[in-house]
Length: 271
Picture 1 (cartoon, rainbow, N blue to C red):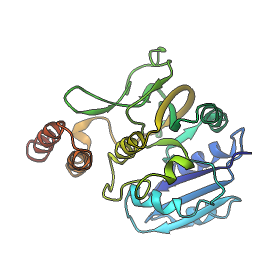
Picture 2: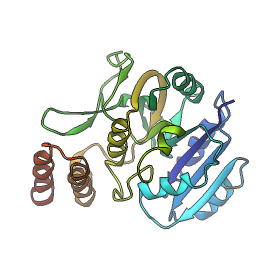
Picture 3: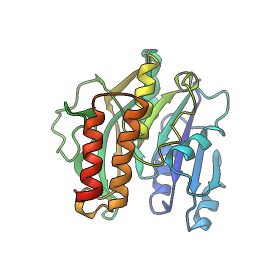
Picture 4: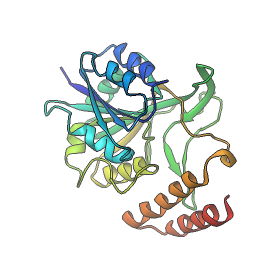
């Protein structure tokens, strides 16, 4: 029997984390290890109660960033684990997500990471948005990375199985064998937040593993940042733009021109 662990990085996520855990508990295949890495949340009481649940390990730390927190969680995964799923606390799996992911990976030994159709979820209204959130991450001809289908109504336009350039870090089902042979930690600690999923995807592909998007894998994602760009704090937009430069420093590409242009437009023109 394949052993699956889940790692969830939280920060003031008490409004969504219980639902995320409930979805894991309802899986048709048991997730035996759930590691919650909390980065300095204010409401510790709710966290402590979650940490008492069977199979749940609570790791508390300061706000060390998404990459470092996930890497910290990996330290608590048992050596016998075959697969690990990284998911955001506002990501809710459908009941057969783990079972189908296992089936896909066992039938496709060249696949190192798999994810599926992420549908939008409105946390305030406690209901699906009816629109897509991500069906894999792709790159425009000039260099901009984007979540395919984001904001579109699902009309079956992304119902084809596909190998993709990158996968969204809100939900990654990973083969431990693939993670163990990567150089360095799983997530690059130089990325505090944003673009760390693309960097991991690029390293995974360079190591010879395939990244698979499978439309039968369904989940919902609340996505914490506001899609209206003008309402996203400039500091966060600058961080995302700076990380794109960092990405192309680590993976040299002519797209560095786009990355610098984007950074200047965000930093100085607030676009």
